[in-house]
Length: 466
Image (tube, rainbow, N blue to C red; front, side, top):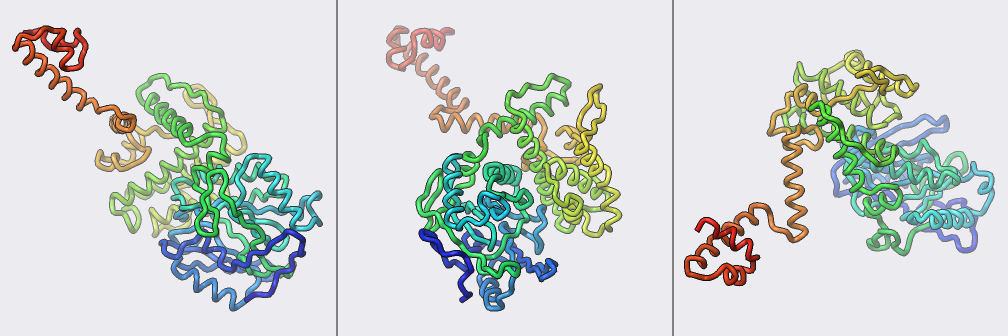
C-alpha cells in the first residue's frame, strides 16, 4: 500500500483508493500493448511497453518499487511503442487541466476547484467525466468508453478531444496533452516535484447524457459522447464524406461538382477523415496482397509516398516526420533513413508550405499546395483490382460506389418495411397471372380488382393483351 497523498482534506472531498485505475480502460484480455514512461530528476525518460495481459502484474511491480514520476499511455498500440500510426484503439477521452496556472483557481481547496469544474460542465451541457485524477498539481478528467474505438476513428476521436479542450480552456486545459500517444501520471505514482501522489479524487455515480453504469463505473458510448461534444453528428459527417467522393468522381468525369452547404469546420473534419480512411485503405491493400514483411521492390516508393501524403492531410502535426518514418517502415522495413526522406520529403515540404499560407496555381486557381488525388488516379496508380476494391472503404470507383449505394438503399427499404425491387417485380408478375386467370373465367375488371386488392386501372393493365 502506498502512503496517503498530500492533498488538502476538505469537507465534501472524497478519496477513491484505486491503484488499478488503468484497468478501467485497459483490458488484459485484449491484444496489444500499453506503455509506461518513467522520468528521472532531470526529466529524462525511460519507456517500457508491456502486453495487455501483463498489465495487472506490471502495476503490482511498479507499486512495489515505488518509483516516482511514472506515466501510463491512455490508449493501446499494436507495436511496442506509442507512435500514433501504431495505435490500435482509443479507450477514452481525457484532458490534462493545469488548474494551478489559472489565477482564479490557484490556491483554492481542491473541493472548490472540482465544484467549479462540475458547474462549468453543466453550464455547457457536457457529460461528467467517468473519473477525475488529481496528479499532484492539476486534474485529469477522463471519459472512459464502454468499448474502445478502432484507430480508423482517430479524426473523430481527436475532434472530440479538441472540443473538450475548447470547452475547458478556462481551467488550464493543456493543448499539448490531447494526442493519441499521450501518457498521464499513473495513479499512486509520486511526483518528485511536489512529493504528492496521483489519486482518483472524483468518480461519477449517476449515468447522464448517454452514459452507462457498468458495475461501480460510469462509462460512455463513444457516439453518444461525440454527438454531445461535437456540433455535427455521424449522419452529417457521412453526408460530407459522400459529397467529397462525389466531387472526386465529378472531377474524373469533367462534370461540375455538387455543392455542399455544411460549415467549414465540418468540411475540415470530413477532409481529415477521408485522408485517414485512405491511409487505412493503403494498409488494408498491403494486407490483402500478403505484404506482411513490407511491399516488394517496385511498390515501396508509391506506398511510402502516398502514406506520407495521407497522414499529412489528416491534420496530424505532432512529430510528423517521426510518425511518417514509423509508417514507412511498415511498407519498406529495410529502407534507410535517407531513403525514407527521399520518398517523403516533397510531400512534407508541401505541408510546411501550406502551414505558411503558401498556394500553388492549379487549373488557373490558387489552391493549397498539398497533393490531391482522385479515386480514379489512385485506382490506376496502385493497380487495384476489382476484388481488392470491393474490400476497401474509400478508394473506390464510380461503379463500386453505385453498387454500394444500391445495397445501402435496399437495406434502408428493408428497415422501413418496404420490399425489395425484385420482390416487388415478382409480386407484380404473380398479380398479372392471377388477373389473367380471373379474366379468362369471365370476371369483370371490377371483380378482379376487388379480389386481388388492386385498382381497376391496374387490373385493366394486367389484362390489356387478352
